[in-house]
Length: 76
Figure: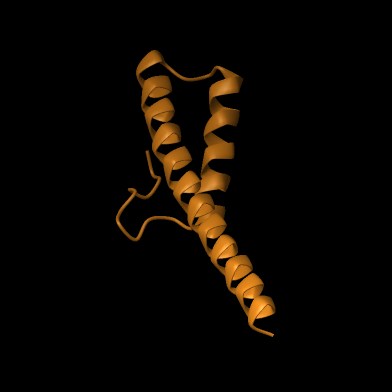
């Protein structure tokens, strides 16, 4: 497969999402061998974890910003 490996820098959320969409399309088309399907599934699982880490990080940043805003309102 020609997809880039998932590294510590890894793909952006958008890159992971787009590649995951492509993998799902390929699996749904059913034109792959069992070995290819398993390889695609494994890649998809890894990409889903990467995307979830990005979403979790974004949620943490939003929660921190909201908490800081509430704290500022209390101090005012």
